[in-house]
Length: 67
Image (cartoon, one colour):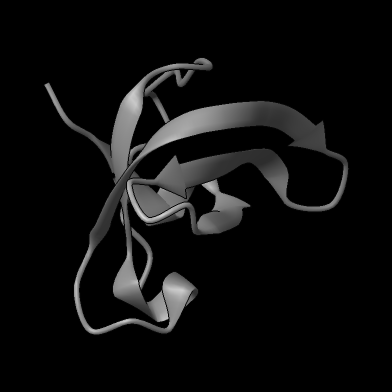
């Protein structure tokens, strides 16, 4: 299940939630973006770190901004 948010721009230090299908957890996890990069095969890829120190990464379509 992809979340369609291709128009959102993510930057380091933004707070986002990542889809459970990507993290293999039961709930969305909230974390701070630690890296944004352009993957030539997948497009924009982000890495987040949550409060427990877990690092997850994937396409930006699997994340949503928290305002």
